[in-house]
Image (cartoon, rainbow, N blue to C red):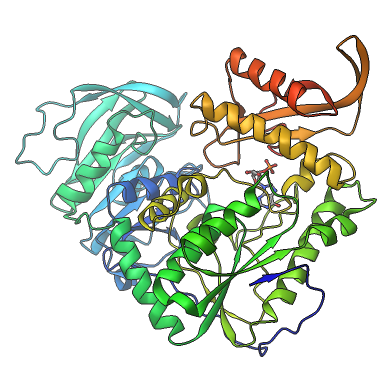
Length: 540
Ligand code: XMP
């Protein structure tokens, strides 16, 4: 079914529904207690890379709450504070008495020392960055329940601490040291508590993942059953239990999150799912067709394809302020979506591709709105539906793995992040159909050339921006007065910070000459060499 730019339609559902969320939580969980570390999410991801499910919990969690979760193990994260300052976060001492295996990392290891009777000295100069750590004598044997068993006696580790443990608590032994950390690792295998001053979760610690695996599998006895194949089976069962015989709808954006959520729910409930794809006219070249091709033809999912480009261009006419453009696109998107889903009067369930990092971050007050994000997948939850959010426990890399598992094509599974307002925020100034067509061509060249150079997976995002100025050039002895295209390509881990990608000159040259030759109206190409901060990834 294809709906062309609908302008009417009811909401078709009763208000006041309770929101229910479909989340699969495996029986075996490792709790990562967050003491405010920048690396807590990374720790949780590393645990999952060891095929063990993990969740992040606040440090205010009580021993009773921990016990109720029956965790297989607990990891105490690092944190920005000194254990000596007033109000420094502590752990409910009862947690140490539960008999659950505990690994403290950085601040977490200092808390073990401090709370169990050891000594943490106020910092001298601290220790930051790469350091060599030496294992103590005698080195651990296979029989010891030592965390560091099997590691080289001297090895590089990543440190980031000001205070240092100088005396382990009674019953603990120090098993390693470095120049700035007399106790770089401590342990009490009888009490099943281990601690490391260094950061095993970062890539700069080459044996870091070995330490995490040793703790989880050998010492805590966790089984390695968190796999995406198991996840799919369990999630399918959960979705069926939640939705029963009901009807569900899903807003597709073409992005990986909503795509995987839709494919997963379709596997669970088949024809009870209808997807709505609002083509804003602001997508990349051929992207709309590819979404329809993938979901309707290959996956056999019922899809309402709304071609709403004209309405978006009408709404954007005369707008030049980035925030006004973003708000206009976001509001119209919701209206168009509501109109489309009005045709499905009996749908009670709304599928969303919410991920675990969104869940962790929601609830934390945002300091300042840099840009008001409009998320195609993130429709407001007052849309009178029960929510089905099967990816709520997953990190992005896990979502991609589920996408593979479900047979989605690489172009979707590996699609770069794309802003909800689409090319609307990559055209500086007023957005018109002509400018979108021009930018789509230039953008396709950027992506094609990076793909040909084998660079697309190492680059977080790469795209073209159309500036709102024109410059003088000369082509074939003729003076030209055309638009410049700015090429933007960044590397990043999470989009919070980014660096401009060091693309080889030859690749930049190929991009430049192809854009000039193939995209009429463009006579100049510039490369943006700004990191984030101070720039943002998008230009608006
Ligand atoms: P900035 O430009 O703030 O972007 O550095 C950070 C990341 O967010 C993406 N982005 C958006 N994603 N809705 C989205 O879903 C939006 O409105 C939006 N604006 C920016 C951007 O592409 C980058 O990955």
